[in-house]
Length: 169
Image (cartoon, rainbow, N blue to C red; front, side, top):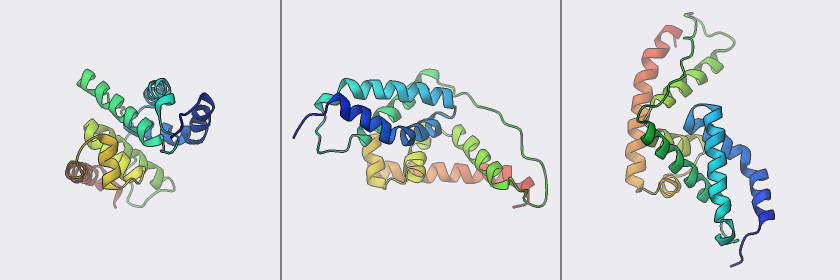
């Protein structure tokens, strides 16, 4: 049971920084907000870095800090900002950029979910964590992860069905 040093923190950020930034961007919706949230999460993690056991993986600890920061911020704001993007052009056949448009639509709808449902879906499906790992990262039960994922996916399906009807899917 050793203690972590500053060099191990720099190494961790170099190795896992991009993955954490991707998670932060999906959780926050906007890259600028994600950068701020990740910076704050890394600051908090660094303050306690020396206390972390070298035998354990620090990523779940940092991810949990990040998720908690995003949820706290949304509680303070009460109303999440929505970034409005132009609707895809109405065509009957998928265009060459259909996959990009579909991804943009999906991310827009993901941003419209509540912070808890969004966190569950991002950790569970984008980060490919198990239900137990997601529950641990969020500090809730596996049942909560299942119900939030189910409700979030149902809401996404409902909204995507109406948004994708003009695309002729």
